[in-house]
Length: 286
Image 1 (tube, rainbow, N blue to C red):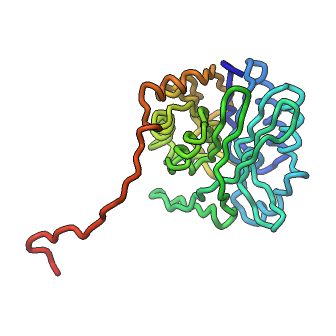
Image 2 (image 1 turned 60 degrees about the horizontal axis):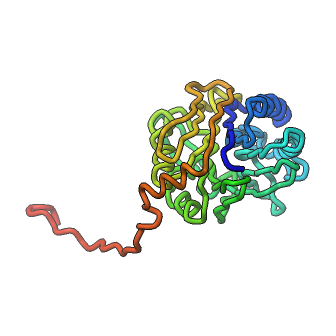
Image 3 (image 1 turned 90 degrees about the horizontal axis):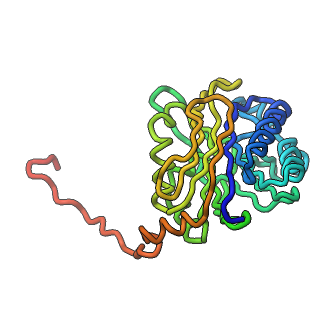
């Protein structure tokens, strides 16, 4: 593909997959109209549902999912690579996967990725999340070809695990994805710096489509969808939490240039860790 335009779609998904599919179509069409040939949507594009029973009633298998069918139709009609950042998919074993999917310009599924790292945290403002209680974690990193670029997959909390991105970069990824539904508290503290760090560490573009604002289920997400270049510069941002589309030019040659300037992927060395017992301070209690 060479140089191309990429778009990150910022959403405020509610509890209804049908309503979210309508919003998805409107924003993806806007992105394609701006010239984007690769379009990424946020984590949980299909629905954000906190209640366990309501969540179980909302989601279905991939072949019956309205977000999947809508995305497939849009990719084919608009002739774009459409990356659903993630949506909840009912697996054959009855468990839910937080699944990203990439559709080709002919509507075919190129790749899918199930989120590996589960957001199980207790924040100091009283927010508590146990993603592992609802979703089965994935076990495989994924890199897929989109024209002249190679795309590495991740979802939201995966951002805090740099080893995932390093493995994908070593496998050839020059474009890394982090669709997300970051909480406002953690987003304000860490969103920008972590995305820029992943880009700099790996000499890769990072595209992060985000959920933003106050959702129907009561959660509040940070927004601020970003596109970061391989030198760590922010080249596009939705500097708010409203639904929006951002677009930037992607040139895979810039990734190669960044890796030539700072060849840390090649310079990495194996090492061991000596975690011997530290000397006891004088006067310390035994």
